Length: 471
Image (cartoon, rainbow, N blue to C red; front, side, top):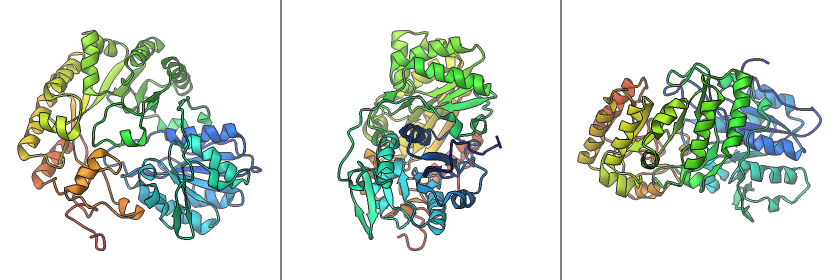
C-alpha cells in the first residue's frame, strides 16, 4: 500500500460515492492529522447498505490527485460528500474541491455536511457549488439520499435534506428521529491508518487518535459540541477495549489519544476503560480530555483516582479552564466549576505526575480587564506546578449555533453572511471587538512558550480589520 493512499473495495461496476474530508490548515499549531471518524462512520453505513462503492479521500493525507480521482471515476460517480467545520480554512478548501468536481462532472451532486453545515444549513445550501446539505449524523441520513439518487425512493422523502434547486433553497420535508447507537468502525481498510500514527512526546512514539463517544452533557456557552451533538453517546467500554486491542496489534501502537469531547462524561464507563487499558498492555500510554468538575467528582469518590489513572497508562489530560474569574465562569461561560475547583483539579493531576494541558480564553464579550488579569494569574499558578503543565491561551471566537454566539452578535460581532465569508474565520487568528492588543500580547507570549505560532492580525469577518467588500 502506498503511503497516504486510500484502499477501497471498489468494483468499477457499481455507482461510486466519494466522501471527502477537505484539508485543514493546522500546521502552524499541530504537526499531525487525525483519522476522519465521521466519514468512516458514514462509509460503514453505505458499505453495509450494499448499493454503492465508497472511497474516503482525506485531503490532509491522501497523495492522489483530486482531479485525477474524479476523472478516473466520473462515469460512475453518484455523488460526492464534503464534511466541513468552521475554521481552519476547511471551508475554503472544500469550495475549491467542489469547483473542480463541478468542472469535471457538473451533473454530480455536491453534498455538504459536518459541523458548519449543521448549524448553518440554509446559508450553506445557498452557495452555487452546493447542491445538497445533509444535517444530523451522516451515517443515518446518507443511505436515504443514496437510495433517492439511485431512483429507489423519492428525494423529497430524504430526511434532513436541504436542496438547492433553481436558485432556491428547499428545507427538509421531514426530520429523522434518531435513536443513536454508536458502533465501532468496521471498514478500517478505507484509510491507510499508518499515515495517522504519530510520535507524541507527551504520550508515546506510536500514537493514534481514537473516538469512543460523541457529545457532552456540560453546557459551556461558547462550545460547539452542544449544538452539533445534543446528547452523549458512547461505545460500551468492552467494545472500545476490543477495538483498541485490535489496532494495537495491527499497527504496533504504543499510545492512544482519545479524541472524545469528554472521556469521563460517563464515569463508571470511564473507570471501566481505565482498568481495561491498564490490563491491555503495560506499554500502552494514553491521553484524554476531562472537565475539571469531573476531576472533583472522581476525587470525592476516591482520593486516589487520579493516581490510578496514571497507573493505568494515562500520561496527559486536556482540561478546558477558559477563565480564572468566578463571574466569567459562572455567568458568561457557565462552566459548572469555580476557580478554586479548577486549581484543586490541577493540583491533583500534578500530584499524580500526569501532564495537564490547560486551555484559557481571553476576550469574552462583557469580560473586564481585571477579570482577564485573574485568568492570566491563574494560568501562571498552574504553569509553575512541579510537572510544568502545558498552558495555552486563545482568543474567544464566536461559533455559530452556540449560546454565546448571540451575545457576541448583540455586542458588536459582525458574522459573515455567506459560506465563502465563513471561509476566512479561524480559531487561531480570530479578532473580535473585545480582544485588544494587550490580550494579543498575552496570547502571543504563551503561544511562543508552547511552541505555537499566533497568526498576526489579518482581515477577518467580524473583526476591526476587514477585507474590501465584507463591511
